[in-house]
Length: 290
Ligand code: MBD
Ligand code: FE
Image (cartoon, rainbow, N blue to C red; front, side, top):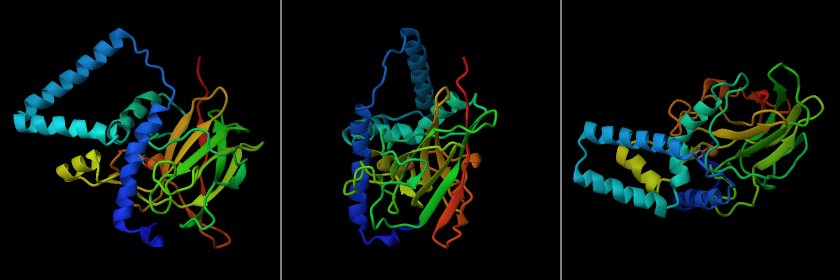
């Protein structure tokens, strides 16, 4: 799980990382969404949000210099196209929490800025789209999808997307084939799936845009631990959006996006044929309640 597998220079890596943040804005604009929040709710939420900020200003007695720094930084977030990145890294985990805390099935996690719907269908046992010479350690990811009463869910959909061994996502970082390391799988008659892929690398959010500027100015780090992104769905069940993590990653404890949960930790084992890793993970998804 290092970038040593690829001789790409650090400067090139950073240039590609910066594009990822900006491309997330273009992708978000294509997402179908309803913007019909009722007036009373906009009033309640906007009033409280502004009040919370007023308290921060009073608490820290914000200077005019700091107020101008804030203005110029906010302008730059937009210019860099990094609003999706900023929001998903620093706010989405709370949105995810309040929208899923009623569930009895699997814990999920945030979607993040790099999901693309409609990835290629690969059946129940298959290989995720990847290059012939895809760098990285081989990984078989397998398991079963069940409903909360324990019964298997055949024909459930398992979408997987992940960074490559350099920590880049296809369709966001340039130079990668479309759909690289993105696939849609369908569970078999016993609710099972088996996906062949590679172990992802840790992900550093772009350091040369506005989000990176905040991180540097605050003395934070820009890392997310290595992770797999998943969406698991079946008719009459709530969509589960999740991420899964690898034990031993130094950033499992201090993920910049606060998206790690103990229930989402994998237990990779060496593959029987000596080729890479095997990880078993089952998903339990909640029926939609009337
Ligand atoms: C990612 O890969 C990610 O998953 C999140 C949540 C934020 C930034 C980059
Ligand atoms: Fe990610």
